[in-house]
Length: 253
Image (cartoon, rainbow, N blue to C red; front, side, top):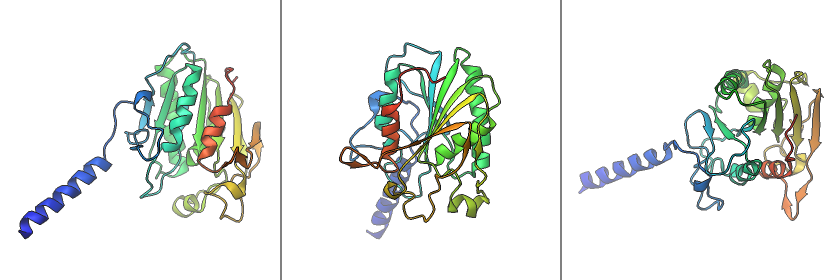
């Protein structure tokens, strides 16, 4: 009897581990869930690298959009759900959309180094592109902001950093020795916009005495988000949807 119970318990553990380690190979709008209860981490449960979104009409391949999610702590559930509606919103431009999945446990310098290489490869593999939007949120926003200082290719980029700890975080400083207090100098071939949430409204930052979003940006633009969106608090994750809903339909550069 004990042996049967133990076998059953081990089988349950294996099933749970298998499910949690599932990596989707397709990336289609048709499988998106917009109800948080039903969401199964489809957007984020995939291998590192680029994943091109399918399931919608593309009419212009000369312009594309790359999105870079943030950091998800161990045990965080519903990873990537904050991108479900924003990604659907971005498809209205009818251009190619890619999600860049990366190892968010990497230090910022290594993460942006690998992202820079991946962006160059994306440019080589898609010679029809004449410009790209790059949209990063939270830790992903820090990575795209660091890219905005390093981008040395001919392809013009419009980079958007949303609700991002631009000066670094206690985690990045403790684990990586990373702190960026000197501000940002954006390269000439990048149109850079930082989208700041209201410090007291952002659940990721409001317990910090100093808002890590505050920094100086040379050759960039700073946009302050409102405190609320209708009756909703415009906090850390909702900021992604607000920005994507408010991006203009014209090509960025």
